[in-house]
Length: 339
Image 1: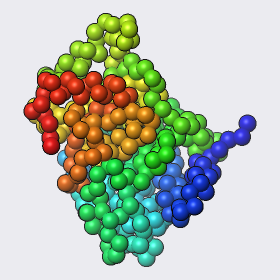
Image 2 (image 1 turned 135 degrees about the vertical axis):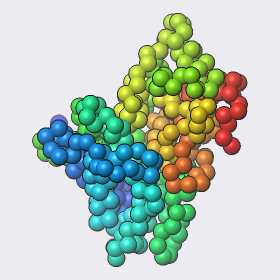
Image 3 (image 1 turned 90 degrees about the horizontal axis):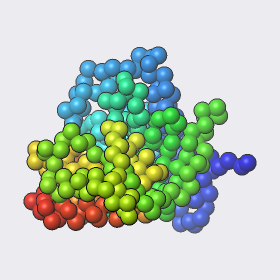
């Protein structure tokens, strides 16, 4: 059986587009290399010195885990050495990181990244991940600026995630379908394992932190009630599955069919998840997999970001599931519209 590696796949796809210059291909390959280093530390976390807290607080006000810091450092180092990226926006850093080496400062792309999503689950040995999005820089000369990052998700040139679980899987899209690669630890290569990923036609899972139920908009409460109703024709009641790592929940729902919801609440209408490096890349992947991503009222990829760490609600999954949630939000919770 002939296996196709991530590197081979990227090069093959590049050859299909004569106008491609190769920079994006090398950038994606650099992300794959950094993911291998992070995977190694995740797999030996209980044996090494990377468990626990680093003693710092990130820009989100969250205590940084040692693995958060390690993952952040690895991706920054890989992107800097590659030379295709001129700046990075990371969950772990307040401001953008300018890659000002002689090779990097002329890079055509900027990368927004959550180096280690779900890191609060590290000690529990629950799946965690990396989420990344790649934009073509807007400025053509000089150093990159925050304006290079403040682009709506529809401008994405690539996005993906890495799931560190029972196996390590890298899923990405460049706007021409979604493909997944599983890391073979025996040879250290990502192998194509999930070609042309699509949401199943019928979804039976809803993923939401129901502990926040009392703070949810009425539209979300109504949707949860809809999911729990008995209706064999529509395969309800749905099953509730919530891991608490966005990457893990989104990946399972992409494979098995389900909606992931992290809504705004009466405490915070903008929700918790960051638009640039969590919501946008997941939304891009969802649309390329035949699904939909909404903030409850509008397409996530059409939202114009105003800040690097801006937050946004998200409803993402099969189109018909998201549209049902949107209809209930518009009917029962119009006051949660953020436009």
